[in-house]
Image (cartoon, rainbow over the protein chains, first blue to last red):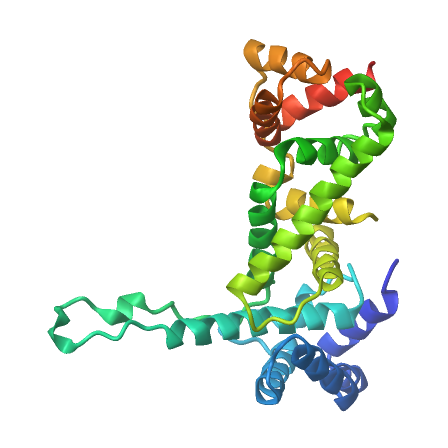
Length: 228
Length: 71
C-alpha cells in the first residue's frame, strides 16, 4: 500500500508511541510546515500559531472532535496531509481577518439591527479541508462559467468520455490540430480565469497554477480515497 | 495525469453538478440538437447554446460521445 510507513507512524502515534509522536510534531516537521505556510502568504506569527494548534489537534481531541491524525488515510504522504490542513486553516484565518476588517461602520443611531448577526459564527477546529476545497471548487466553477462552451464540451468529450481527437476532427470536418487548439484554448482559459478568481477573492494567497493542480490532486487522494 | 484530468477528477468529487453526475433525461429535441451538433450542422450561435445544454446534462454529453465514437 502507498505511504505504508506514514500510516504505521500515525498508528503508532495514536497508540501512544513517544517516538512516533515526536517524529510527527518535532522541529523538522513543524519548521517545514511553517515554511510552507509562509510561502503561501502567512506571516511568521500566523504560521507559528497555526502549526502549534495543528500539532496539538493531531494528537488531542478538542471540541468533541477526534484527533486530527485519525483522519489520515494514507491517500498521500503525511506531510501532504499536514500541509493541506495547515493551508486550510490559513485560508480560514485570512478570510475571518478580512471579514472582521470589513465590518460596517454604523453608529448607534442606526437602529436595532444587531451587528452580531453580521459576524461569522465561531469557526471550530476543522479536520476537513472545507475552506480549501471551497476555494479550489469556486475558482474552477468561475472559470468554467467564463470558458467557451464549445471548447469545454470538446475538452470533456476527450478527457471524461475518452473520445479521440481524430474522431472529433473527422466528424466535424476539422483538422486534428484545430480540435487540439480548441481544447488547449479551454485549458488556458480555465487556468487564467481560475488564477484571476483566486487573486480576486484571496489576494494574500501565494499560489501558482502548479500548486493549484497539486492541491486538487491531494483533495481527491485524501478525501475520495478516504471514502472508497 | 493531465491538467484536464486533474481538474475533472476534482470536480467529479466536489462539484458533481459540474463534474459529470447531473443526469437529466435527454428529450427528443435535445437528441436532434446533439445529432446536428455531431454532424456539424449547427451555426456558431446554436453551437454555444447546445454546448451549454450538454455541459449541464451528462447524459446528453454521453450521447454525443457515443455518436462520435460510433462514426
